[in-house]
Length: 154
Image (cartoon, rainbow, N blue to C red; front, side, top):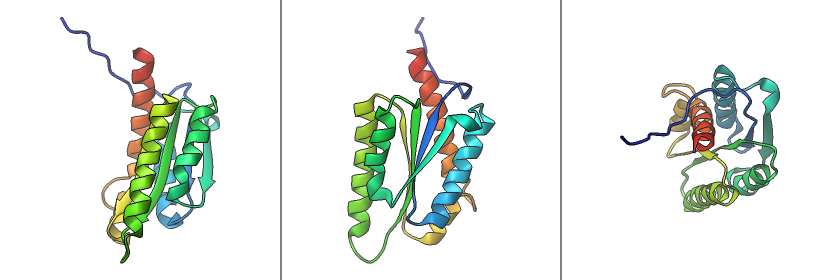
């Protein structure tokens, strides 16, 4: 019979860092609130959560790398929001941010969860930050906890 390994949603004892961009702060603050709610509801102690803020989503990979390689955290959650405009700027920022956060996770061998909204409109972003379509920050909290417990089980 095959052995199956999975994570749980028991965050007791985990230390989690949230890297949050200040750009589009009204939306990102909704994500931060959802993330905090998801972490605490699932057993992560308030005192075991650190929030670090950077200017925008382009700066998130460096901040995540520092947090992930510090040895102080079991997981890092990157939160930001990039909204498509009339120029190709969106494509550069969203793409480089996603690549950088992904590379950080691989290099640090630590869950680094990508919670950066990439939307066409402000309304779409607001909806994903708690207005209509749940809260992607809450989803990221669950993913971080599950990945930590999964990796510990390997």
